[in-house]
Image (cartoon, rainbow, N blue to C red):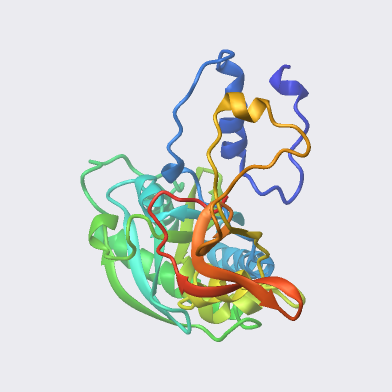
Length: 327
């Protein structure tokens, strides 16, 4: 089947275009051919936060108007995407030297990261000083110029103002810049495997385009996660300090099949094939019985009678041997 015959992606799809492309690569694999997949590097997919998209759309509109007024140019600011990625995967996409600011945001937990595309920053500064908006070519090893750093801080202040306004229905935000860095390796912002929520905004102008990212660890949203899901939508917390107790409590209602082993007898295949209705298989007199869940012995016990019914009285728990399964 040709790629053009594929059905168009449905609105609200839980996979991105990149993930869909990766799935479609199976066409190039020959029948019976095995391919290795590193599950640890697959993009993390979480439940969506409906109100976060609304908040980000509001921010993009307000911030776009502010930037147009500041630069006196026609620019378009739009929400490009909201996605969850491992920190190591996100950091690998950043152009170096980067323009990064670690920011504390109350009432969110921990800190957030604001990343401005270096090429975009150069173009915006050029616009600010009356140029065409094209960033000048320079040594990629050099970081932002003093003018770009000053403009980046001015840009951040405007971002904070507009984010604070957009977040008003969710929570009153307070921002405090902790430090500026040019490499994610020294930000001490998140561990390599930590899940980050990346809010990416696209800024387009006649001379080019670039992105501004607002990144928070998923765990940092815990204080406002309920509100971000919106009314009537159950929250799905990423993590919980009481997850073990939560799982144990819900597993208590799980039904399992138990059986009591009264005795055993060994037969060879010839004897087994010769059995017919009415034959008697001799077993030793009942001794201690074993209560099993699946194939796993869990208790020893004694057979008896209770309220006129056969019963098993549990006498002691049995240790579970390594490698045994209840299935």
